[in-house]
Length: 187
Image 1: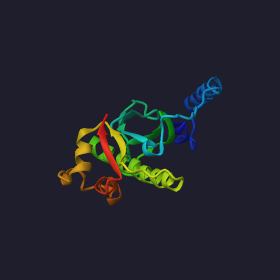
Image 2: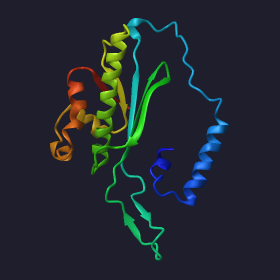
Image 3: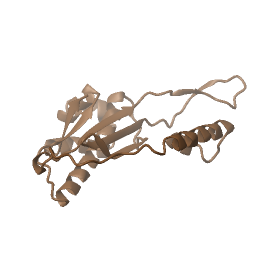
Image 4: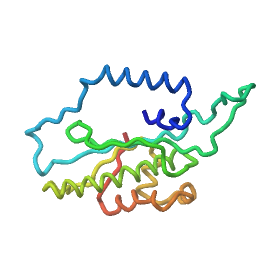
């Protein structure tokens, strides 16, 4: 649906067929739902959530232009990776996001770092929300990451030259890690 929304200003027959396919899928899965159950094993001491984050730095960067008679290849110069995260409580999703990255990146480590920063901000928000509801989080929120170099950049600022071009907003994950609010774990 997010991919379709990007083409609303100039839809084609291909987009119309994709929209019909999406609506058929939604109609066929209307009985699917998230189920939230009471788990008697969960106490105030272990009432925590877990995050998972990922970024797709290098999907199909080169596309064929439909307008070109010789189907020349072209590269999207405004390319930004797709990133996403999900937080779960008792194996049920409680918060999630998938979107284009707000920052352009030049490596998979950098795009994972930006995604981890976005997830870290959400983790801090959820920690505050849980505290307001009477369930303070005493341990760092675990965020699972599948990129080892991203984890190393979060834990130790040793690769300045690899990410020095990124906006300062992307470094918030490092601050949250230093304060003990979040921690990363290799997936």
